[in-house]
Image (cartoon, rainbow, N blue to C red; front, side, top):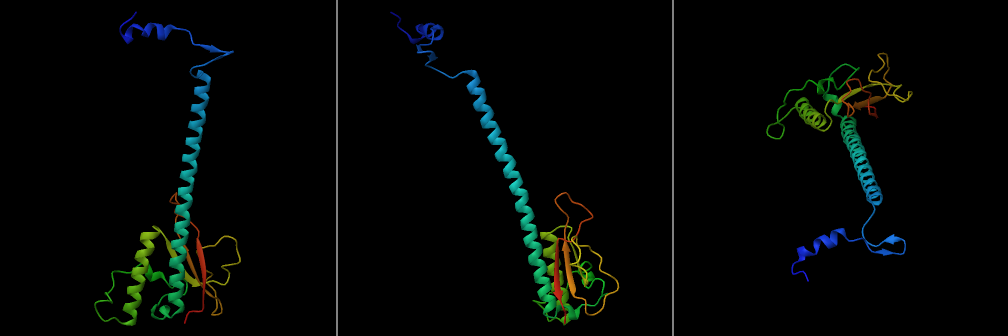
Amino acid sequence: MPRFLSDHIPDLIFSPLPVIGQHYAIGFALVEVMVSLVVVTTSTLAMAFISSHAQVAIRVVVKEHVGRRLGVEMATWLRAGGAQSLSGSSTNLLQRVHNLAAPLDCYKAACTTSDAADFYLWHWRRRLVSDLPGARVVLCRDGRARDSTVFEWPCPSVEDDSSPWVLKLGWPDRRGAVNFYPSIVLNVGSIP
């Protein structure tokens, strides 16, 4: 009679597996293990793929939301009379948004109407640049903005006073394209 467990190991390793009917009672076949590994690997890769596409879709939706919020805010400001202090060509009334230096802080000092407009535009532009890098904004008269399926940046050079003011806002896609179309086109209507 063996005294130690190690004396039983050769018997345990080399003993035949007990058979119940026509099937082995202990363990799995190599094919079963391989099939289960393929199923687990495939489902893991599918979940990673779905997760990455969901993240991209979420980023796109967030940019659309931020762009629409900034566009509606600018359109509301313009309708409320913010454009009265703007001077510029009628081809792009917001051209000076791109060229603004840090304005006078209207919270700390008294501001004129022009200073207050510059203060608002500078802060709006700062949010635009931080939330939508590489974004472009155009405000001009465009009576044909809704006529085409693809929005264009240029506004017709010959427009009369009955043409509505249109705010066009766009940003590069995730691939960083330099030439991109406006993503949001808002009809501002008449600006006082």
